[in-house]
Image (cartoon, rainbow, N blue to C red; front, side, top):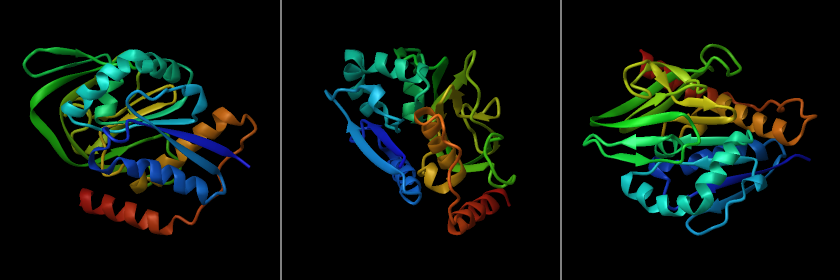
Length: 248
């Protein structure tokens, strides 16, 4: 019997636009395969021992929520997050969580705010919000070309840029993505995956959900050979109808 433990970082503060749905999607798709899942919530003043977790999730939050957690991160969590990323733990960061994993956030007035520094990325705040439905293509996903398309919803004023060793999560088909300039969305570094996609991201994109689960199981069980298939007829219909609607 396979088992996975998921850590939800700051679920009471970094949960914008229903990002908790990502935890639900990961858990359900494991349960349907008889994979035991435990979800641990870690927030202000809680211990964070990354070695105890197989998947770590940090959702989105506005500037106010991010300011609240910065002191807590400085007490040791930031360093342990860096160590978790470097150790190859499966990590998912969404929007504000994506930005926080980077080196810094420069506001539109020129003030520079230090972030965790786990990824060589940085964000510049703009006066115009990048908002709307988002479709981007991920070549690493299994399935036909339609299943390689990821759908989501973005709402951010920050423009994020990727540094050395960090690959984009995908190529924008519709929407703005990281910055509305280079045509890329999200970031991948080792087993850390980041995106600006809310909505929630994973329930609408089962292929991406299964990819993250597979990486976590490969980390924990060297003899793991692959996930058993699920009847994803409804999920594919929902996904494909959104793709068709947004790209028509």
